[in-house]
Structures are given as structure tokens and as C-alpha cells.
Image (cartoon, rainbow, N blue to C red; front, side):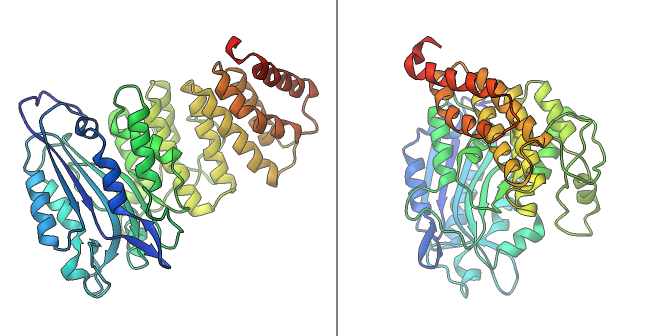
Length: 415
């Protein structure tokens, strides 16, 4: 979110901690810890703007009308706005509407003690496009999760950029510590040269966070594809059956795609029937590597939910991400992804299978392109272990990789 010439206008950061999410007496997400961690980040970095800014912390609120008042005040600001929400999503039993549980919310008191999710969209709807970012780190309880699956996303205002994660019920969680997504978001914000854009921060955080299987990542693959299509307008191809190729070429066969949240949603079905890889390819070849990687990662998350870890479909998207990392010049990440994909392939395929050999070739090539000694040493053991598991691989390649690793150990500064 850019300044957009609003130096004389005030911005606003609104941080809201809802009720703690608990599973079997173990804390899954501790919203108060997340707010405390965000509270030490300079406001200008949070907002990505140098305008004067007001900051509001809501931790432990029990009255949804109080939260609404603070939200309405924040939405009325003329400058950039960041709204962060962390906590538990739940549903009122009578109306089946999504709510953000507040402190003290119980299953029987949702209608009176929780914040209706639609209020967020209502208050932000009138704001100009490009000035509003909503960041989410949420857990859906057992009542809310089926409704999210039905929607296929989390409803929000079309005027806001929405980034974040909604974890499913039943996972172990991080206790009273800062949750993985928020922690990684802050770390990437603080550790990156300059201030990355919100999409880039989100993509980096999702890639680094230990997200529970099935986590809903926002924007969803379909929403990201729609956004990318609007800005780059690449052609889309029908999706045939079968596993995806580990290439982002527009001509490659496509993976299964997300079904619409409701069978009657014709427009959503039409969007879901498109192969996202032409869009990904167009973004990558035009230098928009972060957007390409974010879109691919969103699709990988979806396929993991549908087909499971280790499935050919999910592994194909892992290989696509590896190829995108290579195109972006991130050879360390590409090496790790190709090696990981090769290991998964090897668990269910012959060492001589073309996909296994292709993963080995991709991993080895990207590793040889690494010029950072620490990164090369960090990825070498796993790579060499994988290569040794391929009996038909030219032994000279393994020997050369071993020699390079030994050289790095002796004189890493000379690489």
C-alpha cells in the first residue's frame, strides 16, 4: 500500500485480538501474543507509509459494539488503513453467520458477545480502493469450518486487500507464543531490505510458516488468479485431466482446479475451469516473480487440501514452484524445492522414473548456480543424499557434488 500523495492525511493501524482459540485445553492461536509482537514494529513499517498515523489496540474486548465503534473510526480515516485481526472464527447457531469470537464468547452467546464478520465488510466498503489492507491470522472452530468450506473463501470488502490464513479446527497450535504466520510476517518485514509489498510479505510468510494441513490461505488461488488476470490478461487454457507437468509453460497440461463454493455459482465455476499456469507463466516471464510465486503457492495449498501430501498433483505444484524460483534467480530455494520433490517422487516411483531424474537434474543444476557459501553448504547434505539414492545416476556427478561440498567446508570464503 503506497503513500499515493497523502502526506497531509492521517493513516490508521487497528489491531484487534479476538478470543483465544483452544483445542483440548491447548492454545492454538494466542491473539494477545500476536498483538504484542506487532506492537513493537514501527507503525510506518506496518502501514507502509510515512503519513502521521493513529494506532488502536483492542485486546480483551468483550463488547462487539465497542469493536464496531473503533472499526468505524478507523474506516473513516482519509489515509491508508491496516486492520489486523487474530482469534477464533465461530458461527451463531440460529443465523449461521460467521463471527469473530471476543473474550468471553461461548457457543451459546455468539449473537451477543462476538463480532459479526459482515460488519467488517460493511464498514470498509465505502473506502477508496488501494488504501485498505486487512491482515488475518485466524482459526475456525468446528462450527465455522464447514461454512468456510462452503464459501470457498472468507467474505470481505472488495475495496480492501485481504491477506492471511485461517487454520482448520483440531490442530495442536503454538501455545501462548506468537503464531507461525504472524511471526514469519514480522520476521520478513524486519529482515527484508526496504519495505516489501504486502503481497510479497504474505507470500514469504506463507512459504516460511508451519501452517496446519488444510489451512485456508487468503487470497485463495481463484482470487489471486482473478487479480493477476485483470492486470496481465494472459490467455487461459482448458484443464485436461491428469497430473501437472513440472513446468510453468502455458502449453503444459493442467492440474485439477478448485471447485466453486456453491454449485449454482456459474461465474465461479467458469473461473475455476481455467488453467492458472498461463497466468503464472506470464507473470514470471514479465519479471513479476513474487506474484507468480504467490499464485503457485496458493494453488499448491489448495491441491494439498484436496489430494494430500505426496500426491502427484501436489508434487507437480512443488516442482512448478521450484521452476519459478529458478526463473527468479533464487537458486537456494529452487534447490530445496527440487530436492524435496525428488524425495517425494522417489517414495512412490522407481529411481529411474523420468520425474525423479528430472528433479535430480533440476536440484543439481540450481545448486551449482549458488554463489553463497552458506546457502550451498546448507543445501548440500540433503541434495547429495538424494543423488546417492539414484543407482543409475552418473557417479561422476555425485563425486563432483561431494568434492564441491568438501571445498566449501575448507575455504567457503573463496567461492
